[in-house]
Length: 405
Image 1 (tube, rainbow, N blue to C red):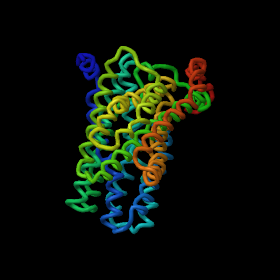
Image 2: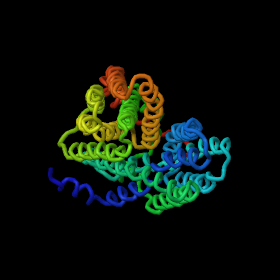
Image 3: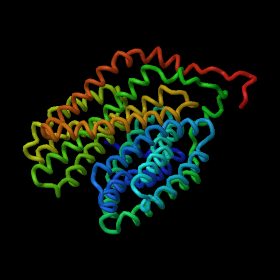
């Protein structure tokens, strides 16, 4: 495929710098879950149950805080939100290693609530910098960058804890979080395009954009991460049962490469596809993968078709959200999208784990695929009304003349 469309995208003012800062800023964020887990298990000598409680507290905090931080960005701008969340992350990761377990759980929840909103902010700013006809490519490239950060961050956390210990590793994460926040503060990318800033300032009631169709879209985004999380656990379980645990890293890396290839191809297409169709296709292609679970090498190959749809499915949901929500509410909407992704993964882990323990990894693939397809089926009736809904959403109400700015 020709690279010229991607070159044109990266030549747009501010896009290349934003994506580069986004890649570097996301690496410490993706390392946090693994660092907390290993700190509890290795550093505090507690069990995986306690580690799961800490990561659950952090995840719940992030799920609640993501739309709140997006709403504050919409109302007060990017820099104040980044200043508060950067300080909160630096404080937590600088002292988390010394906290007793009960305090660590509470602090993890608070740190999740004040998490650095790097994922939603990058997508919001990318929407402002990229014209509509190039956004599919922009969001596809962003999804590929997210894949790279998830391939890098957890691996660095494992290497740090096993070689340096959890204390120094958390200190490095504190430094990385601080650098990421300061980098975004200095860069201060726009959250709205020049045309949106020049338009009349309007008030956008939440009921005008948080519609059943958007809720259905967020539900299918959650279904996508449900499928991905369950597939990863089933893949790891299959390799572990085969006594080939040393190959887990390579297998997961190959799966990520499938997603990168799919995102690259999808971004270069002249037209996109419905996110519901892509997520349903990913579910349908995931369900029978367990038939190849007898040999993990064949299993990795069988995951190719569904893997190619990972990045396109996720990027299409971001594109759909950005197209359905007014600019004045885009930050909160992107925060809700991030919450949906977190909820899907959080629900998937215990369900897939229970299926693997009871029936084996092959059935986890089947359950994951079935959940994805069922969620899309539930969303279809609401999604069909999106045209009329979108016309109502984009009709914004001018603020009253007596309103306080």
